[in-house]
Image (cartoon, rainbow, N blue to C red; front, top):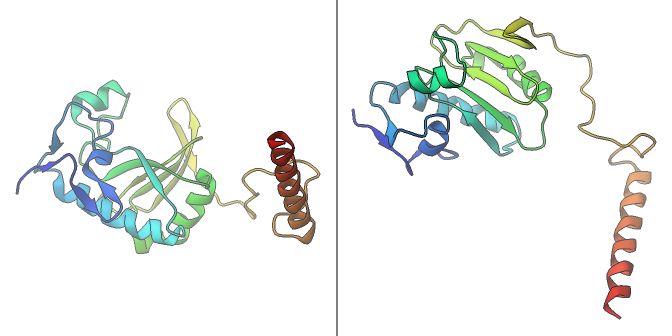
Length: 187
């Protein structure tokens, strides 16, 4: 099996360059970890579909030993084998992503998923332990527990509920105001 070089696709929406973000010194994915990285890419395609096909941004994926040490990764990290990645999803908070992972942990073949403050860590290691954890800081973790309801990503206090008629009216008023402001500046 050959090395997958930068610029190549791992799957329809994930690239070798994304898999090597945290290992900039490599020109490609080494042959010995290629199957694990490709499995992770395939499973991330499945998760991406479950998340409404929103853009997924891997922030850290395969790491060689040197780069794993540099970022403070654990000595037995699944990033070293290519099975694990950290990622964000445009327009979603880590808690929302974790809810979807929790509902599909077996289907996706998840070994471990961890909700961090700004991203999610997921591993598709063949152990498939189904661990769901919450990072509490200082390298400590507790079992992840779903909340009853997910709050909107950001809503101004006192603003109308998104999708309500009051919300649409406020949106229309904001658009009209923007157009009038633009037209006034043009004259």
